[in-house]
Length: 201
Image (cartoon, rainbow, N blue to C red; front, side, top):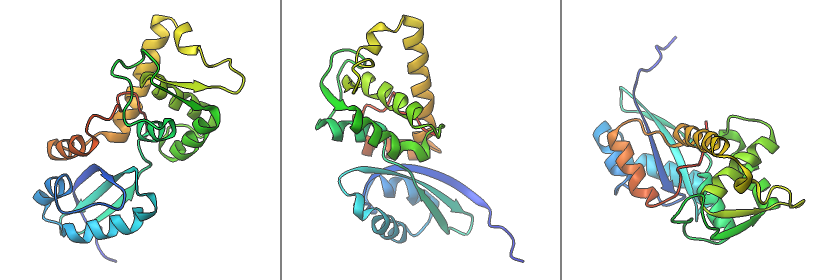
């Protein structure tokens, strides 16, 4: 029986689907680990080609013999929300001032997409988490029954703080880099993405 290979690093990067290349941020994040970057980019692009136009985070496990495996994650909620709302970016004042709208049907579709990476298997809970991200971006959810539309203004300060803390904790789980080099890479590709309220496991 072969001995289990030892892991030397785990790197997390956000990359445009189907467009990975040896240039930064991929090269910057993976170069120091000595793996065959072209092999990774070809494999990543092949698996994400059908998702072109969005960001697909990837978690790369690098072994001591410089071989690697990787797992694709779901696109950040903020990216999916902006796409649904037809926006390039969210509000410059998170949580204040609506800059766009999404329907409850769009919210449900995004929540369903995010379910594999969220810490819940309940669609309604997933919808509330995504709705919290949308509110923090200044994007209003048009609820079918209209009862949830004004939820954010009705929350007291403690409730809003708790909601934001939960969103930030989930975002950290989704995007937490494995080191400074990966963090720089993630920042480079994420740009000014409003991920501060996105959350995932």
